[in-house]
Length: 300
Image (tube, rainbow, N blue to C red; front, top):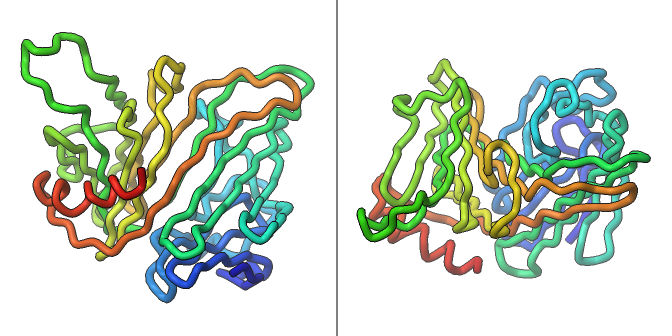
C-alpha cells in the first residue's frame, strides 16, 4: 500500500506498508526515510522535533531518519543542504525518490521495495554524476537510530595463534574515539555500541565488515541490515564499509560501497536489505548467538 500522508509538519510524505511494517519517506526534503517501524509501533529512526516540517534552510539539517550521502566526508562538500523537494515515482512495487546535490553535481536516488508480506524492505541507493568531469566517491548510507538502543557488528571469525598469522581486517578509529568508553563492548565475536542519552561525548569507529550485516536493537524491536562486501575493492576511510557514530541524541548505523570513479552520466549503486523483527536479546555474546544470528541467517 502506498499513500500520501503528513508527517512532522511535512504534508507530502509517502507511506509504504504491507500491514506488518511501514516506512514514511519525505518529498518536501530529501531524499530521506523519516520513519521505520512496525505498524502502530515505535519509530526506530531518530527525528529532531525542532527540524521537522522545515524546508529551504540554507544550511544542512539532519532531520533524522535514513539518508544518502557520498564519502569521503569533507566539509563543506558533504554538508550540502538537502532541504528542497524531491521527485518521486511509484510503479506499484517500488517507490523511487530523486533529488540533486546541486553544489556537488551529484544526483541522489533511493529505491524502496517493500516485501508484499514479510517485514523486509530493499533499499537501493544510487549516485549519478551530473558534472562535466569525472568524480571519485563512495555511496554512503546512514541510518540515524532512535536513542536508548544497542548496535551490534560482527567480528571476524576467531582463530587462535598461530593457526593464522595474517591480519583479519582494519579497525579504524577517529580522533574522538575512546575505546575505554563504557558504551563500547569489545567482544571476541561482536562489537557492541550502546546509545546513552546521558553521555556527554561522541564516538565513531569504522571497520571492514566482510560478514555484511549489522543490527540495532531497541525496546524489543530490531533492525537488521544486510549489505555487500566486495573483495579487493577500495573502500574509503582507510578501508571501511561499515561505520558507527553516537552522541547523546542518537546512534548511526552507516554502510559504504567501494570508492568508484564516475564519468559524466555514470552511476554507482549500493543496496541494503532490511529486516525488522521482534526480539529479546541479552547483553552477552551467547545471547546474540541464540537470539540474533538466526534472524541474520533468514535474511541471506
